[in-house]
Length: 220
Image (tube, rainbow, N blue to C red; front, top):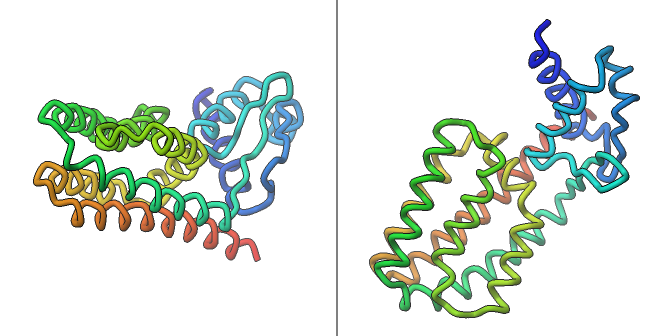
């Protein structure tokens, strides 16, 4: 069995066990123990854990190793509701101040984002592109405290955004919504853009919650 196949097998099975609730949030994933469980060396286990880290299911802590991330429905809803409130507030104030340069920058980021999604590669960069695109639209508002809060909320939401793109099969929908948001911003349609943004964030939230609840139900 090729090395990558071993690593992928471990990653696929660990993903199933994490999403299924076997490993609760904050569980330490010891590489030696996993290697023994799966009958492989530590190398494919390490590769699998890095894959799951990129997907937001695992976090590495300095000097402590790998741990499963918290996957709480209540936390997801709170984070995404806060995003609706703060990002809508900032976008409403940013759109009237958007310049052609701002719009060109947002469009360039969106083009790179589309390419990464379409290629199915650069998973590490998917959520980075997502935040960079939104930030490009928000920056002209010149609301540094609100923008800092948005950055913190997006950092905390990062693992869930990755999950949405990977597991809900709604990549094309997310792409369409981003393009619609950019078009409305270019037209200066504040209300329309804010409605699209709210639906974009809340639909992502519900998609993630559905994945978690479906996996938990299958284990019941």
